[in-house]
Length: 273
Image (cartoon, rainbow, N blue to C red; front, side, top):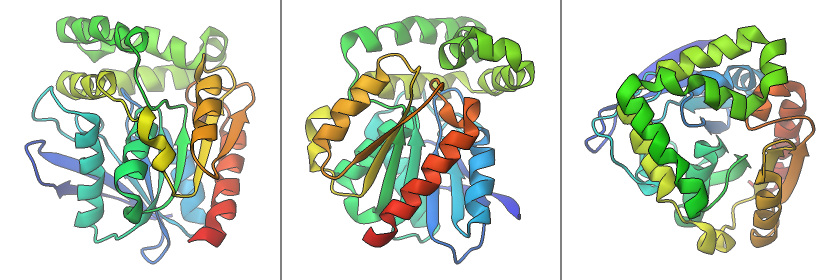
């Protein structure tokens, strides 16, 4: 399957955003947005699978992550939503399916609330729609550590939260891959996205989402199964799938189960678009 990387110049002070393209140009477009401290590399297997299904897959590196640049250490979640729209505009896409995980899922809530006309469907994974104070507070210490020592200093604690020690011990190759991805994240990029996460509060408006929506969450991802169950009740017609024996990145630790749920989502929404 053909894989190309296009770097787009988008509006605003945040420099360049990199978009990784796969699949046939005429296929239905799917935009995939990743977790904080990762990059579009976390979507490689799923992007290939969807491209093989005939979809045009666009994996966006969030500002300051992967090949994208961040010109400052400050932004809001609405700014990250605007980045997504700028990429769609640059590629002349009126509408697209959106798949987002963690930070990417939060961006998806913003898109669904404010820009439903740009969306074909939403698949939002392991994400919440607000950041209460107890969730926001730990990010200050993480930002301070990254400022002092670089994002590599965050790697071990982060991957242990995401996957759990037994998985990391069983898959040292994947553990090292994510250490490397985290270490390559720019400090400005991490801080601006962490600040956006801290200031996010879409919860009171998720009930306005009318886009066909699937919520997906790893069964072992802390309180998020309960959080996303409540979100399902707020979004009319939304479906919720819980991925068994998965943590915060179920596409990595349970890829077969995740990809099956991904394909079920596209089958379900096919009649709506």
